[in-house]
Length: 338
Image (cartoon, rainbow, N blue to C red; front, side):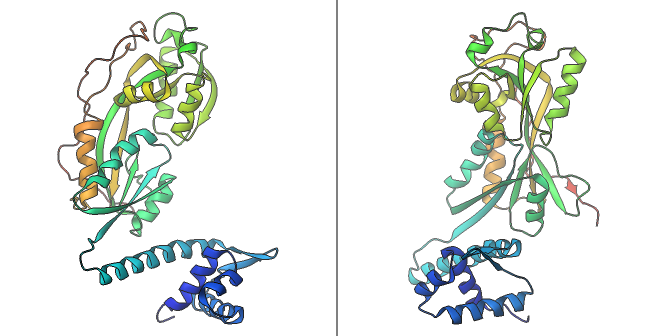
């Protein structure tokens, strides 16, 4: 195929969006035979099957789903081009696609990404959530501008990129008030036998948390494991078990989920990284995200009972030490194999 036939691609896009050839034909004012023929030509040109029969209807193949996502972007950009051509006063919209790893707390991700919508430039924010390796694959082919993760880029991937430390925070342990009242003793002894909600295996702090339990010889009763941090907190809010979250967002967690702090684990630090394909950052949205991480999200944390202190769930939060955050807006290159 020497060049992509955009007319054929639009026919495929409309069939996929409408769910059937008949409905697409009504919008295109064409016969089903004409549209079916154009779809076959597109499949032959691309060398892949895009649609398959499913009962009386059609369904997208895996290749069809991938190509549909590109078609969405192509025709969205085309509509924007027409708007600009019709109205010369229309501001150019700056697209910003960010991937957020499943293991990143959603409350933190929201606070980090939100400033991208308040820039002088008009920004169209595109958020993708998923496994880190899949997001880094999209970053490598420039479908994402940045990935936010709780670890730097793995060294075993054939991707060239840079890991920018956004900041770090130690952990606080939270519980629903009803559950907190049943806990006896001081922290961390009160964890012994208490119901506990662990983050999933993909979360960087999971192994360190288990090592911390072992080192202090306190063994909570693990009642659940969650990849999604928001779901974990919801179960914690319902009293299913204790859970941890970054101390930097302790005030948000206690307010949003109506839980109390029962202790603090100062020896475990949760880090967040912005992974990009450029060393010196230029995209205004990425610069804004790193700035808000430095000045707001990781600037302070709320102290609670320390690892050897007694718990006081009613204690008012006080200002604590400054969490570490990156000084320059550049990063050490992490060139990968390949």
